[in-house]
Length: 230
Image 1 (cartoon, rainbow, N blue to C red):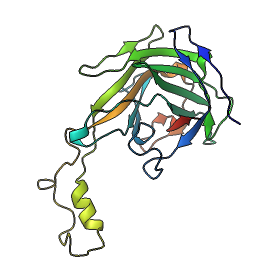
Image 2 (image 1 turned 90 degrees about the vertical axis):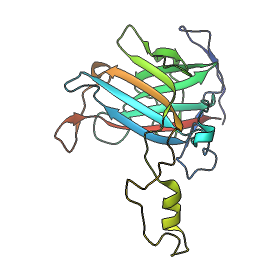
Image 3 (image 1 turned 45 degrees about the horizontal axis):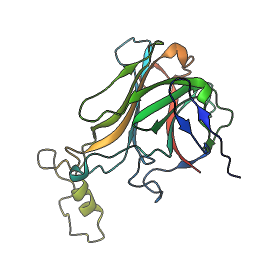
């Protein structure tokens, strides 16, 4: 059953309707391709060694080829950073981001009332908002020490896309030499952009990390999903 509900945020006169979302997949879901429901990359890291903050970066696909370098965030897409704190691979905290009228609104970290494929915007846990950057980067820092950014950023991925297609082509002689060495390879996505959402947040707001990475450092188990409004 479709649920429709309106919320008025204290931080702004933003009204969001029909806040039931269904997850999108990456690339192989036709309904997400070419939109900001399509997740390109996700990063989580300390901004500096020994920092008590964590930075989350979500890169979303939207017209990433150089001749279509700038896109826009889809207003019917909720981006959700999921954080597992007890090792069961189920989200215990979520940070949400959704755009409206040229601003990205953030909510959380908050314990979700339901886990899995569907979600809702937790407007009672407003974190802050920031103007969508265009020609210059705009960063908003809240009173709780959270820094927020949303806008186009250069795609960090180095990939010779056309040579890759030649290598995997059914025509076995289309790329007899295989992949090209770095000095000959072409960066297909040079000059292209993804639409990025960045949150730098104190670890004290997230909870204690319970995972250990290959370097023996304590880290969060985290992943990102996009959910489309139904």
